[in-house]
Length: 510
Image (cartoon, rainbow, N blue to C red):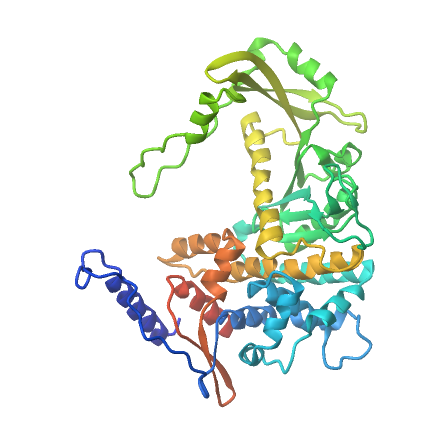
């Protein structure tokens, strides 16, 4: 990092810490908000924008070769007058990164002269043109775009540490995208009465990246088309340098027709939930008592301060008991295992069974106990049964990624008029989430005394929610200055994360 910038950041940090010092009570006898006689004016010469971090995002997209790859390989426009394919695709991603939630929000960026200058753009597509671009896609075009993103992520992965490639964990799930529209082609009614689409989403648990999105009609089952999409993602991960792969999915994805094929490759392991069928429950009930052992889940990690706060009272629980609502309470968990060969398989696999002892209560009265079984099928014969269960539970983190795609970058929406165009919209807008992941992966980690801290910061960025990432690294007020051949973003405000921000700035400049 530039020594001048390092000194400026330290100075700003010192100033804000002085203002926030709780021991400095000078002038505290009056309310804090004292601004009065406020006026607004329009600047003639000074120009600024709220989302100054978008410049670094664009520099990242250029650095990893994304823009050139899109223009060279994706051909949707007969004449590039005035826009290229990359202009349209980045328009969707940048709209999400600048806190846009729908196509109409593109109009705000389009009419922001400073935003256009910050990206060196004379103009950007308007919402209507953006929607028309989505409608130009065919399935093959969407596949081409996904392949471009795969090649880009491999280039980003290539700069990672050797340990990064130990194992790729691929999670899969379906999620409903509801719509109130009545004329959207390809929509249908889902199992719970929701009208809309049912896209399949595959993610890389290591980084949170979206590996693939496949849009489907709302009435399609979760696992439909999953095996083929998994095979594509497996090929990408092996091409990217990962040495082993773990596949995870819930009970809808225990596709027995493909388990043998995946097991034939020694580099592939899988852990899938399995439906609690009557024959499996009968087998579990016939297991001897000594085959079961109690499952002990890890406790909460100790707080960094070393002191645990007193847990607040369980208000909800008290209301449930006082009003004598009927509720279920987990009493204990036991674990066991046995070998099992599904009907569609030639081989036997390891079936882990989790027995939950649940009591049904009403108020303070305990009505009766019931036993429920959860099953997990795996070809991992080395890990303990407990480790398999915890590994399967780890897939629940994908629900957080799906939530970010729904409510963070707003990629999982039916914003256009048919199944394929909405598929294209989802893939292009989800690029905003992937750019966040690639932003974190491109953070340099230098050997030396700060290596551990920099690795921790890298993992912290990868784990950020989309809104938190935008607030920390994109929503940075900047003054825009054109000096000679340089386009200068001059930061106008300080936040605690700008040291990380400038680490990436320095890395991309090099």
